[in-house]
Length: 347
Image (cartoon, rainbow, N blue to C red; front, side, top):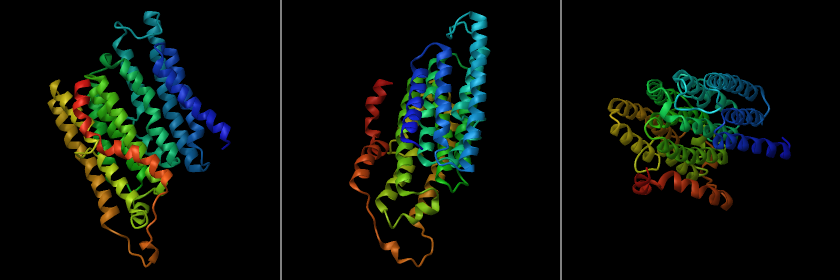
C-alpha cells in the first residue's frame, strides 16, 4: 500500500473516533463512527487475499447494520423531541436501540460472532487497531448515556460476554482468535460496571489497551500466530516468550499483575451496588479465561515438539530498538498493581 494512502487512512480513523468522542450532536457522532468504519476497511485488507477480503466484508456488514440502527434511534429522537441530542426525557426504547447498536459495534454477546472471524482473517497490526482503537468511539457514546441505558440488557450481555469470551477460547490454537475472545470478555467487564460507575469503565479500557497492545506487538515481533509457532520460539528468544506469557497471565487477571486491578475494582463496585450474583457469576466465569491462558503457557514453555533440529539451541536476542519500544508497555502491563491505592482514591 502507498505510504501516503496509509497515512490518510490512519488519520481518518483517528479523526473519526475523535469527532465521535468530542461531539454532543448525534449526527456528528454517527458521522465520526462512519468515518472510522469506512477508513479501517482498507487497513483490514492490507494483505490482499481472499481471507482478508472475507473478514473485511463481514466487518462492514456488521458495522453497517449497527450504524443503521443507531441512525434510526437518532431520527426517532429528533421526531419526538425536535433535538439532535439525547435528553433526560428521551424515550426509553430509543436508548435501547442505541445500546443494541453499540453492542454490535463492540462485539458484545449475543452480537459477538464477527469478532473472532474478522480478527483471524486480517494482519496482526490491523487486528491490534480493530481490538483497541475501534472500541474507543462506541464506548465514548456508551459513557454519555450510561445512566439511561437498559439495566436488564446490560447485565445479561455482560455475563454472556464474559462466559463466551472464556468458553470460546478453550479450543483455540490461533493467538489472534484467543485475543479476540479475550476482547469479548473484557468488553463484558467494561459494560458491567458502566451503569454504576462509567469512569471505572474508562480505567478498564485503558489497562485493556495497554495489555492488548503489548501482546499484539510481541507476537508481531516474534512472527507467532499460533501456539505451535510460539512454542518453537522458546529456545530462540526465551526472553520474549517469557514476556508474552506474563502478559497472557495479566490478561487473565491473575494477581499481582496489572490485569487483576480492573477486575478487582469492578467486583468491589458491583458488590457495593448489591449485584452480588452478577459479581460472583463473572468472577467464576473469568476462571475460564485464566484456564486457557495457563494451558497456553504450559503448551508453550513446558512442552516441546519433537525435532532433530540442532538450531534449537541458538538463542537470538531482540535488538535494542525493540527492547526500548516494548519495555514501557511490558512494565505497565505487569507491574502497575501498586498504583491501586491512588486509583481507589480517584474512583
